[in-house]
Amino acid sequence: MGKKKIIIALNSAWNLYNFRAGLIKALVKEGYEVVAVAPWDKYALLLPALGCQFKPLEMDTTGKNPAGDLRVLIDYIRLLRKERPAAFLGFTIKPNVYGSLAAGILGIPVINNIAGLGFAFTKKNWLTKVVISLYRLALRRSAMVYFQNEEDRRVFLEKGLVHQARSRRIPGSGVDVNRFMSCQPPTLGVGQTFRFLLAARLLWEKGVAEYVDAARQLQKTHPHVECCIVGFTAENHAQSVSRAQVEEWHSEGVIHYLGVTDRIEDVLEAAHCVVLPSYYREGVPRVLLEAAAAGRPIVTTDWIGCREVVSDGLNGLLCSPRDTDDLLSKMTTMLQLPAERRMEMGQRGRDKVTQEFSEEAVIKNYIDLLQQVTEPGGAPRT
Picture 1: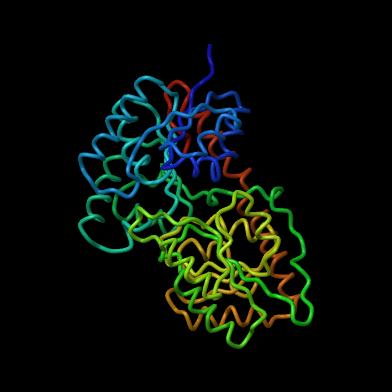
Picture 2: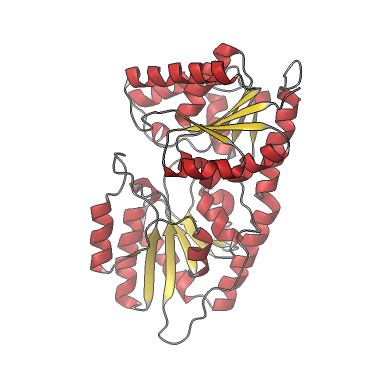
């Protein structure tokens, strides 16, 4: 008997490589044949090194064109009919919707992961109604729907989008604590630079404008503070900060733009505090898990997903969403804390993610569930 084939589908090869590499490698190690599916980008070239195949499937990840989305559904049906996997793992909205619909049509078991609700649930409009209807249709046959925080799961349960017995919270996407070895932040002497870091996809709802405004005010009274940004802009995304705007801030000197990196651990090592003033409908922000694993104190918002990682006053500070003054206050407080206190916060953060958010625990959920749904009968034990 040949290996059981698993399809894992996301909205970009970049996302597959950066957020699901650990899962892919673990499934391969367990003896599964893994096929990764996403629109092609340069990270597709790196995926075979993880032990999987890559199959491109084009989609406009931000588009709202019904004809284009129908094409995505048809392409998923064709791909799944050809590959005949034992199970389909969906991540991000369009793979979760159209990939799951295609798998349901073909009788393929589906496991979904809802990594935050994004823009569609931020405002109540026609798009929200369409997305809710599509989710209700797509998830009705899922063997399991994983959520990264309990608040998102409650929304789906209240709207009747998932069955309670076939939905479960798991600890985000998990983090490899061995990759992010805790180390002391750079030593601060008189006149030396204190570095704040915002690392994110550069969307306005990640709190980028609030961070820049706080940085501008903070540097007036603390000239030895450097506020860094690392992350990419998506010029085709309506909510993306433009590259021109980022470069303008950099030229002004209000922020130091570090570009894009696949070695976030190196950037974290040079930072004293990580800031994420997000009011986006996060699942659990991966950068907060990585920052905590690296032993860095955090300033973030008292907001869905973010407060899953940070306990106010213990491993970081929480501020109000969309509140530049409160963000500035918490960044100033962090700056003025004794170095020993920040180190204590960092160690508590590492202890928290090690105990509650390990990638190993997330992967075990998938492996245990796949063993159930790919057996004859295919029903998960709940």
